[in-house]
Amino acid sequence: MKFFQSIFNGCIFLLFIISFSCHEHTGSKLPELNNGKPWMTDKSTRLGFQKMDEQFHHANSDESIEEYHKQADQIISIINEIQSSCTMSGQGHEELHKYINLLLEEVQIMKGNDIDLAKKAKSNLIETISRYSLYFQ
Image 1 (cartoon, rainbow, N blue to C red):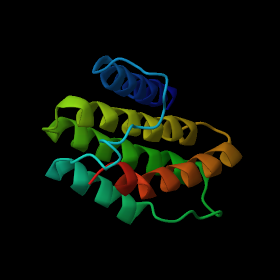
Image 2 (image 1 turned 45 degrees about the vertical axis):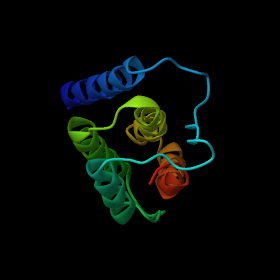
Image 3 (image 1 turned 30 degrees about the horizontal axis):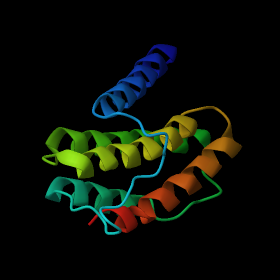
């Protein structure tokens, strides 16, 4: 089991590296708007965030740590789908990576062994997913 946890953590680290390698960091965690407006995204990105929103729109305080781990894996799977089929380029693409990194930070916490931190991370994840339309359309 520890072997699979190590593999998973390696995959998370790889996602961070891929996301960070695409752009220079400005120190801001939140994406910037496109002259005050949301960035246009491609269809696969919109569908991926819609799927996340449908699956993770509410928190359940009765979930076990194993359920948080499973949900984190589901989010990673959706993010992988988004990244593998993304056709975006330019500044909007860079801003999307910032946003995905926010999700991955919470996912990493959900994969830990502290149930209280996992609950808070899921709540933060749900909030971040729900704010997608503020930055992207």
